[in-house]
Amino acid sequence: MDRPVPVEPVAVVGLGVVSAAGDGSAALLHAVRTNRIALSECERFADGPYMTNRVGTVPADAWEAVVQAQPNRAHARVYRLASRAATEAMQQAQAPLASADPDRVGLVLSTTKADIEELTSCVRRENAPSIPGGHILSARLASDLAVEQGACGPIQCVSVACISGLLAVQQGARMILSGAADVVLVVGVDVLSHFVVAGFSTLRSLDPLGSRPFDKARQGLSLGEGAGAIVLCRSDRAATPLARIRGWGVSNDANHLTGPSRDGSGLALAIQRALRLSGVEPGAMDAINAHGTGTVYNDRMEALALQTVFGDGMPPVSSCKGMIGHTLGAAGVIECALCILATRAHVMPGTPGFTDADPDAPAHILREARHDTAYRWVLKTNSGFGGTNSALVLDMGGCDE
Amino acid sequence: MNEVTIKAASYLTPEGYGSSHIGHQAWPTNEDGSHVCTDPMSISWSSLFPSPCARLGSKDALSRLGLMAVELLAAGFADMTDAQRTEVGICMVTPTGSIATDIQFLGDLSPSTFIYTLPSGVIGEVCIRHGLRGPSLCLMSGADIGRSIIAEAAERIAMGEAEAMICLACEARNPATEDILNSALDKDSDFCWYVNGLYLTGKAMDDGTGRAVSPHMAAAGIRRVCQELCERE
Image 1 (tube, rainbow over the protein chains, first blue to last red):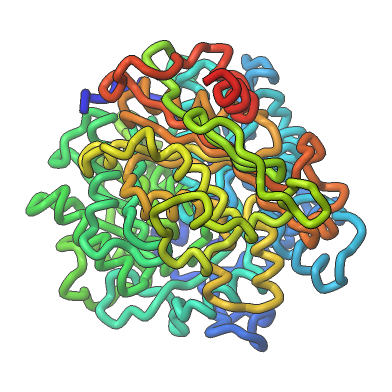
Image 2: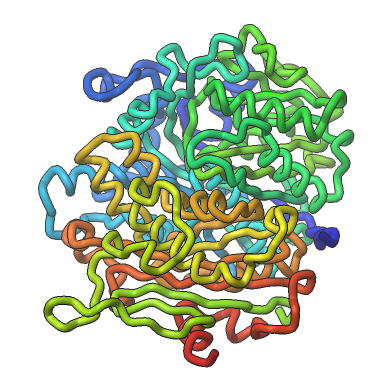
């Protein structure tokens, strides 16, 4: 196959996050610095068909701040979280937004289940006549967020399992590069719900003790909720970008609907595609933020994929799923934001929950966060149901705080 | 865009099915004399295709439709090697996605139902059946309010990210979904279920057949392009 057309870098100019770590990007960065496990026992899931109620829920004080900022009771939790993260990111991006035509400000939403709680309540009321917010439909959630944030340009809503967030960031960058938009707000959101916690419980894929990525005693993942937002624009519009997106890759295992490939070849393919598109050699990569769910098979698959691509030159690897849980459709966006926040603050994230390395784990797992100044290229990966894999290359050169 | 060619088109609707290779076929006559198929789960795979589909009974309606539409396109890539299939991806759009299966899961809490509560399960099923390992995308949309799914697929070929792409527009609502969603439904559609498929290739796989993707075509909805191609050829 011909070498792909290299992509122009796309600038990141705004970030916003609400997660189990708290309200705002600063709360997430603080949790990264301290390697804090923000999982907790949630009363909502104490009784019912659930394997565990240990999840990454947005804490009460953070939720209170979200409600204060978005007091409209007609809006459900999923909308309020997305709105809060989007608003934080758009405020940070004021300079490039000031000169942008609203018709050329796009929005890409990533979610796997949108307002699944609304669907659940409709079904339990036995065929309610109408939907109050209509945010069961992701596209409607995206449209309403776009109106609220003044994004009158193109809108997309991505749903590809757990790689949705990374794909949404890529779609945002594509919108910029294709000239469809000058500025794009990318939002990833998913909430904890009866539906999702019961679903993963039926698959027996949750760890009652909390996610422990790459640990030899790991038993499964921890679910989380939250929203992440990233504002993108053309590099020449950003005087002081927070980061630059340099390339991406997507692949499919073509192997199994829910189980990861046993040889890691699908994820390796996605990483190789991302490196090729960004023109970065494997040896140049400074850090990897892995999907790292804490399930036995996912982490083993990832280790094999990383070994295939990086061999003996493995850069430090981290995962934040043990900190805030797996936020599904929000994961890729929140985790990209985490990488950018940490790198700008000269922090290399650790892997909360990780204690003793599995013999199959990647060679260089970071247990604790560490200070690091020489730090430019970051690889972010995610994988998901349907055999999907994605990788994104971030260029942090010259983007220090 | 002129380096990307549409090699084949296919569709299944309550009115019938067809492709750019076989033309339109009506469903068998019902007892009331009509040819309308109201339930995609009732379509018999073996009556349409000679090669069997493993574990079809366990799959949801959305996945079945996606698999059938791609099977109708499959003549276009039957001779492809495994290496070539690694460079073939899928772009899909669906208005309500897996909501019918979501409702089913709320009733049965079965793990075998839960795994189909993501619309992108269709992409996984098609990739497994045909060994496709290229880039994939699933957009939730009633209409193309961002860029058309054809433009998304063509861009991946033009940028060298894939050598060929499959485009799918897929919807599998049922009466329960209609009742629940009611006013929130995409009323642009006359059908509660449909699937449209396109097979696009780049220079490397172009044998001179098919139709070049024009900017007009790239901006159009997949259903209109499918209709045009299946009527013409």
